[in-house]
Amino acid sequence: MRYPLYFLIMLPVLCLLAGCSTIQSVTPAEQGTSLTEETMPESMLPSETVSISLLTSPDDIGLCDTDGEDHDYTFCYDGKMFCAVYTPDHWKVIDSFLIRNTADIVYICQALKDVHPIHSADMEGYRTAEDMAYEWLQHNIAYDLLSDDSEWKAHVRDVDIDPKDQGKSVFDLYQDRMGLT
Image 1: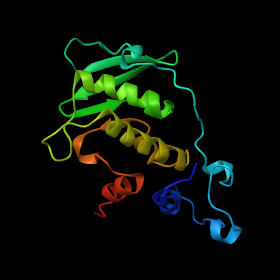
Image 2 (image 1 turned 90 degrees about the vertical axis):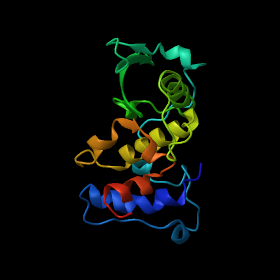
Image 3 (image 1 turned 180 degrees about the vertical axis):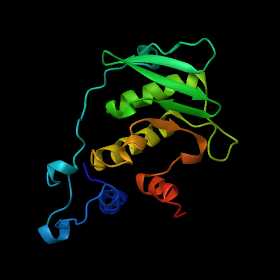
């Protein structure tokens, strides 16, 4: 799998945020190879990869309103309970970084969307499950790139899906948080 250009651009930025004072690397051009999972240093690869989908539909997670007020929800994934909190036009999934399978993330987003859709950035339409999953995956990428002692890591461990972050890459999210846009 090839990593997008913004991934390569964001690595030094995230390293600096995490407190690294120097970055040692050899560019793919210097190595004479392209950057793939096979050539990427192990420290840059996601910490956990799940390749087989555990879900077959959004119903498989058993999304349940736990407070009876359409605010606090739980769902089960891979034998673990997860919490999701809904506020108007906003879903927050606690410990979302633990869920790695893209197809399963889409199913979970579809289940959330079926209960409470989230407006798109233009506030005229609604986000798709795939679009919501993209935002979730960007959080997972940031989580994997940040060191454990980074203050930013706590901000990306839980995904919060809302209209304003629709379609934004890790790089875009970084620029927004740093006030660079």
